[in-house]
Length: 245
Image (cartoon, rainbow, N blue to C red; front, top):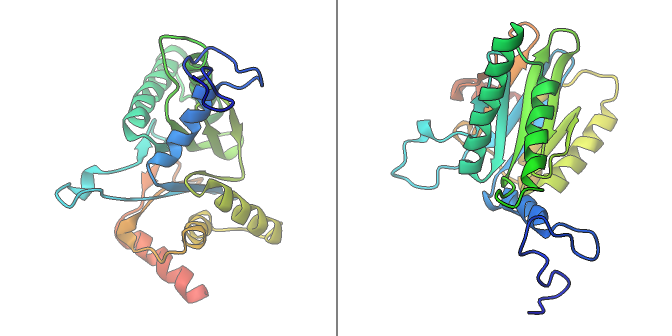
C-alpha cells in the first residue's frame, strides 16, 4: 500500500492527508500541463489580450476547428488551458450562467462576477465525492463599463483573482517571472498587451512563432466586443516585434 507520503490519501477527493493536502486537487493542477500548451494574458490601459499556442495534433484535422479561445458573451472571452474536453464543459456552463444573469437582471454579467461564479462551482467539485475537479484553467478577459479592462483567472481548486498579467500551462512559472520583470521595468509607461504576451511566449518557449501557431483574443475600450485576431493581424504584430528587437 505504501507509496510515499500520499499513501491511500489520493484515492478520494474528500479525504485530507495528515499534512492537510488534497492530492486529487493537486493532480488536477498537473493535468493542466498535460495539454502541453502555455497561455499568456496581459492587461493594458485600454485593452486586454490573451495569447495561446495553437497546436494541431493530427495532420488530418481541420485547423479551423481547433481552438482554445471562446466567446462567453458579446464582451467577455476566455482562454482554456489544460484538458480540452473539460475546458469545453466549463465554457458551456459559463455561457449558461452569463445568459441566466442577463435574463434575470437585464444587463450583461460583469467579468468579476462571472469568474467568481465559475470559481464557486469549481470549489464545489473539490468537496463532493461524486464529482472530480476539472483539469483546466480558465482565463477571462473583458471590458467593465466602470472599471475598464479586466483580466481574471480561475483554477481547479476554486481560487480566483484579478491580474495585471498572468499565465497558465506548462511554462507558467517562467512566464510569470518574465511578466513580473517586464512590468516592473515598464512601470508607468504604456504596454501593448498583444506584443508583450507574444514576446513572453516566444521567450519562455525559446521559439519564433509563425502566425498559424498562435491564437490571440482581444478586447479594447473602443471595440468592447471580444474577437480573435486573424493570421494576417497576428503576422503584423510578429513583424512589429521582430523589427523592434
